[in-house]
Image 1 (cartoon, one colour):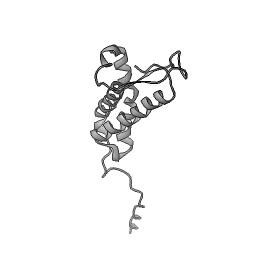
Image 2: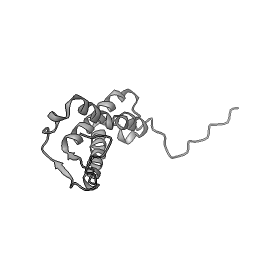
Image 3: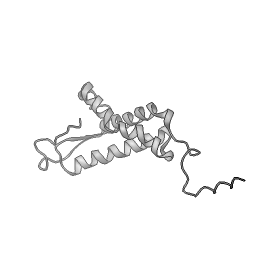
Image 4: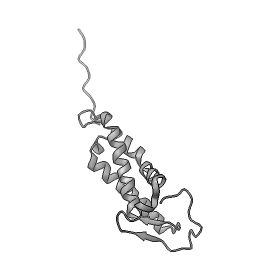
Length: 126
């Protein structure tokens, strides 16, 4: 489970990895699962509204999973005395997707996205 503070052995204890899916989910508990669902929820909610290229569920899933993998890798590399778990990645990415689905009504489509090309000047009235 991701906590706000590094463990007591941060920088000393070698990194630990849990690659068995759904194994750590049981030990997370409802608070741990809820917290992990919220970690990338804002990203999932707002990214498709801001960037039309991200306005699809598979792309938000990839974005949430990719960001979560970066966090889990940093935890391992920086020896933060935490377990880098595939379950954290799964739950974090799920949270991003659920939040994205909550904002789907406001997603920008490619047709609505602003173009980098200048618009033609309006015709003179007369």
